[in-house]
Image (cartoon, rainbow over all chains, first blue to last red; front, side, top):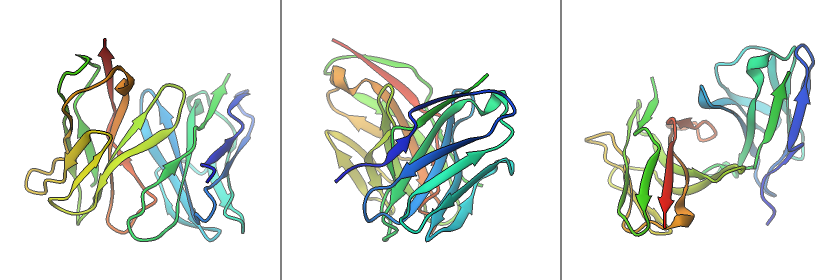
Length: 113
Length: 113
């Protein structure tokens, strides 16, 4: 079974631009979560989607948004990029059965200049 | 609120040494507890999990026991290998919020031959 796939692997953007990151979950997994990883703040939860609906949201500004499609694929968007948005963005999926754990992709490394 | 605290790194050990990485948590209700591992340039891999008090998670020689009385979930391995060098994250999922992981700050482990 293929793992969680995130594209692109690397991105370089300029401050003020916007960016869209993509995530394809493991086949059969219906829940997708997004995380931001930085050296200073560590791993922080952004949001979770299930059945195209946001189920849970972390403490990030409204510039960070996401969506999920009917095939469970997900995208996250960051508008008006700031230097502090430079991070590794990780996507994770799970079947949404009981206490099933999250399975992570290898991430998208975003650099804002 | 919910939080996870783990021992600071880096931890440097010789091959075949005993490993302990301490992890304590604060949570309301009954969280599930996890250890994830991150190798350079990769995403997070689930190492082990425990979903209720006194559960012991184990995988690849690593073990951790969910101790509700001490709110701890310490990671142990009897004999580490060079290939265990990585960053280890302790995490919890609040009750009924399976897509939301709250992480500790991570502990970098370096194993020397």
